[in-house]
Image (cartoon, rainbow, N blue to C red; front, side, top):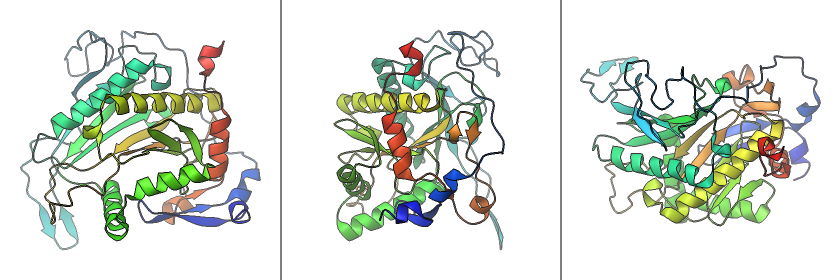
Length: 352
């Protein structure tokens, strides 16, 4: 096993059915490629030019309220719209289907300069509580099947506004990646009678070498099949299908883990660590062949996909072989987890 982790090999992702190539010997190669401009950590608490700050006017002319906690609103530039009566195209190899959806923006904090790892416990609990409320309210639309909550954090991830915020895209179909996870979780549940991700997290806790942070209810780990260098997966210790099943205890527990994981990310290269983060949870309003099965195969989880590789200025590129064949990584997931575990749990901006 040790020899496997020090030589080229590939690893299977049971959640999607895909593989990732691991090349640990390549960590010794010198870097003469592109370096990124590091993120600026100093921002004002309020920016009069920011479209998302309280009381400011957005690009469509609407004025934000003087919100004091979290604040959600319909996206001014929604990628999908609730009203779409266009017809499908069925022309041999040329097919298209109309899509309907709801897009919302969620400001995590009224302060322009805060991020999740620098917010306090109650503030992050408010974010999770708002996610739960939005999930419930959007699910009341009977034509909605999937609700994707996510955050693109940092300009390196294409975020156009540094104000701490995330998005919600809800739509009338199950998108490709959640559909793959749905299929694999259902097949495992039917074959084993257990939940794939619960069996997985229990096995990871026993091994311990890929765990980053944990508490009584959630575990953050570098998955065995991780693609991005410091990718993490947040899993519950006991099955919960969606935010709809979260009580206040689970809300508090998830907020605690998000803060502690975020601090380790920021401390790794002492920067405002960029990432894309998303919640995967049970679909809603789905008409199933077997109504007794419901969505019992689903387990709520969160993916964190950070692009940084060697420093705050060097990122992992998905190019060449990755685009044409399959994902590839150099640093092993075990090494990545060990590095993240060793980082201080006190934010570097709070220590001095």
